[in-house]
Image 1 (tube, rainbow, N blue to C red):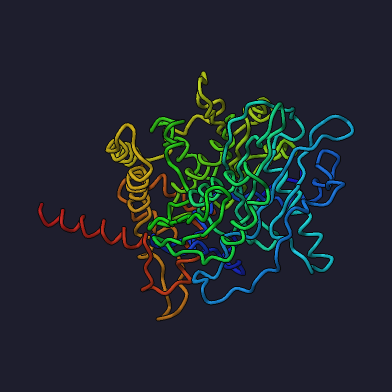
Image 2 (image 1 turned 90 degrees about the vertical axis):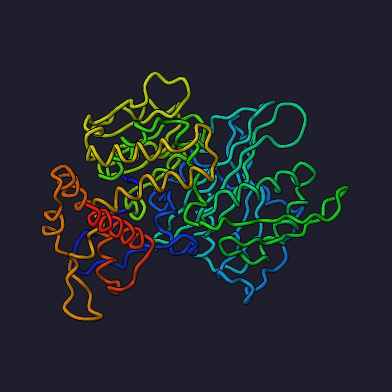
Length: 498
């Protein structure tokens, strides 16, 4: 089948350079492969986007109400070397001659001119793919009088491995009577869900007045330097009847977690259920999440992949599977997929997978399971995680969860594989190392921990982690190594007391 896959070679020789996975909080996004959680491999369905079910280009040109100015070259003001976003598109549902509603791009800022033929073709394919992810339901739409707006995200992964984040807000446009919803989608290399949610609030406010009001705000945003973690950028924007407004956009100090909201994960699942999902993810199994809301799917899958830090999910990851790609569930390789509830019957008849129902009022959480999910993790370490999670308040804030959850899960990897550096043998200073796998897991005293680690070392996420460690200088330590050193120091102090 033409599956959606991200496959990394596990051959120890001639391997490709792996993405960085070791980074302290506050580091720029380009070093945060692990936190760029959802990877929608739309490149594998390029051939599909020309089928009849995919919307055609609109007969009329894109909105002529707005004429973007020529792009200005970046200068030294862009400390992070990147714009806030590449472009904003509006995806509207247009009624076809056959009477169905198809998603079509009706507005784009900025328009990209001067492209050669192959660039234009690739751009058109990207824009068509965006319509699929903004309206994954396909053509199953009708005019509405009420519609609760929702915000979600996805990632477009190109053939060369580069990634772009898609942030989408769907809402009912201003007007009277029944009308179909429309979607605003921002494509950016930046992974910061909270920041773009605030940007969408401003876009939506201007859209209610006039489409023309969006352009000056987005132009100001595009010209602004992208702030470093903990910093703020102020955007000036004029709104009739309100005058000039200053919108402050601040990145959190801890950029590691700025793209995740753990509240959704722990609202949908109990602590014990989260641990079972975590266990299946660590062993790189096939996992499908099912929910009615698109935002729930994207936020939960984001959160699950963050729990893997410092490791990176290396396989197929599609936070919201468009209906046209539903056959991806038949892929035999590991995946994390988000599927809307109405398609559940089409995906839960697969074997050897974990199907997780996130919807409210569900009869059971795990519709399909292998059966050993509760016994994958060493019992004592699993209890340690549960005890750490219990320290949070019942109605914990986002900030509290962003502190408690990493403190609960990161020690698990510190205790199971934190001794990895001792088993990277180097022939000399500055030389790449060679990992001694057998000696590594045999060094563990706990039988249950050794049993788990023996399986974990076979995963691609661990393999790429070790590949990076082998190539890195022995004295180059990241955030994970700092936590390992803290743990080892506490253990030595504990030993001295006894």
